[in-house]
Image (cartoon, rainbow, N blue to C red; front, side, top):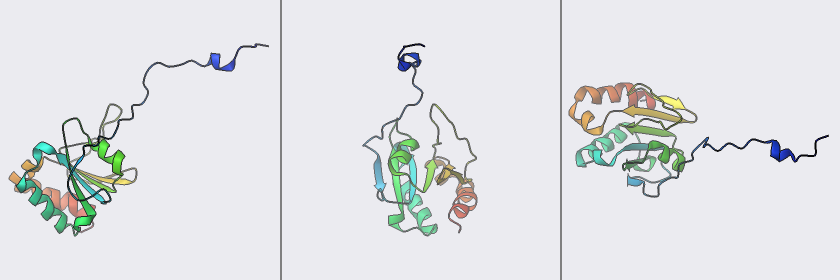
Length: 151
């Protein structure tokens, strides 16, 4: 019988199998709070008075009160995964972002809601593009927001 310690038989891997990214403490809430059901995520560089007004009108049209949604502006290097990990929202609207990292890439059509795990997600264009193009705005409303919120 072999008297060798059982742990000496285990091979130890020296490569990273999974990286758990830390949630940055600097997520910028432009409106709403951490207990919101709907998180609207966009780039910090994409927000201005016009785009914020458009988003507020969209949320009102979706029959959401101010306490039900939050606007989060991501800085460079921040991702929607940071938002998900920190707050586990029920619904995420991603403007010019997709759920992806080194391990997966979820490529779905724009303005078509989909489910992933226990969350509903909607991808869309940049806010500036939606403001400038009426057809994109109509597509977002008719094929994205109306089905997502059962309007």
